[in-house]
Length: 199
Image (cartoon, rainbow, N blue to C red; front, side):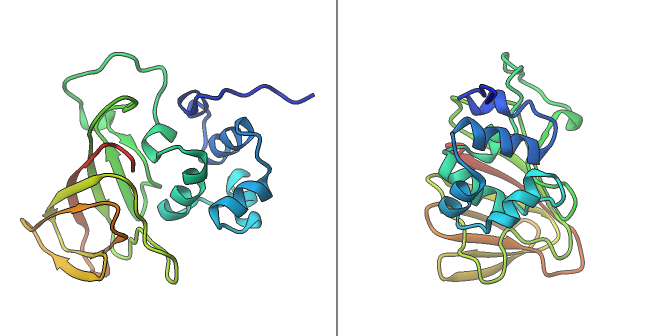
């Protein structure tokens, strides 16, 4: 007998691990592993390994898997139990949207459903990269901007590649394909905003 799963992605996000969350969300949409793999352009073996928590997906792979499900990273990791909006947040209350190792995206606020903006504290360890070699750059329907607080960051937006340093900033239409990476030997920290929160 097939278990009934919620249609609301925020309800699915209460599951403990990324793999379990992704599997529950996929099943709630009535998709097989192969079906989602084909829609996302990710090998089905890769998806299977991720769902069994044998491997952590990169942010770019997770975004590709969530796109056909019409779910953003923000909603995927949201805490559906949080109803009230706080005004102030302690550092420990920011919601981690990435693996937190090489790349960390800590979101202000737990549940951004029906919000018009997302604010992130981003941390790029040396070698961190939002894309994979040979992979298409990411794009989404929003605008985003940020300021480099520490270190340096190499950004690709459309056909332009720039290295930004402390105090430098960016602002662009997120429908332009983009990628951020830290090929340097120091940590880079960025404070950014995305509107609407389609990240």
